[in-house]
Image 1 (cartoon, helix red, strand yellow):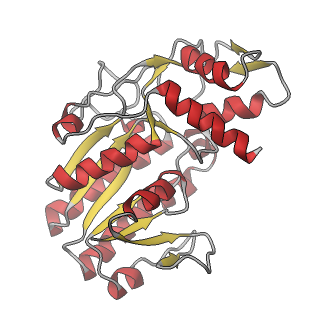
Image 2 (cartoon, rainbow, N blue to C red):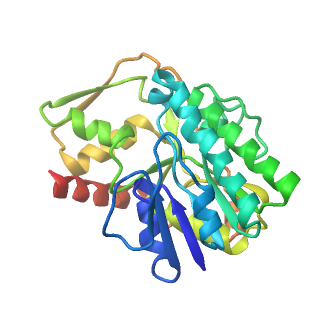
Length: 297
């Protein structure tokens, strides 16, 4: 297949490039300047022109790994988040509509569309009540994918990714723990530590994308992507430091951070029906992450 990966220089996108390049012809697209990489196209960060890309080249599959991926940043600059997570999805799909309607489109969405869940585990039929601009914008992007499938038969699929982590991620919980512990033996976090998340290693995210490519109907399928394990922030933080630096103590401020839900764990029935089984447990994943952190120090 000819595969276009948009956001190819980012966290998930870079892993997707490495994986799919083994058996497919991969084209990359991002905002970063790169004069060396073959099959690479740069777009403007604020006014990306996807029409010229899809008019010039034929792709069998487009994986959209681009966009903003931070709840706190979406609260500070919601307009930027809207442009990157909503407008760019529309532009990409409209270019596909005009020039290559058979191209399958995978949109990386987020569990943030659910907000605070009414029940656990969360299945794909759960009501969508996002509590941050980021979550709202991901919900809107899914609606755009639905629109292009319903009206123009563009084959789309949205993956609701829960808490992804792994080598290359320079944001969110584990990066925050690393940064805060550089010069401190005590690390302070929001919340009580009893809040829960469903963590999935980035390599399992890529395996999930592979399963979707091979088995989804692309009739605007919605698919949860996670490990299916509910873990408290306290236990994952302690696991991280048991590997990185056992001398560090973690304290919690007992203050909520705006935009953060209390508890998350995914129902993976649909993803499992595609043959997906997670391969990287938390301890193994964090061991690999710590190894990467030590390499960049």
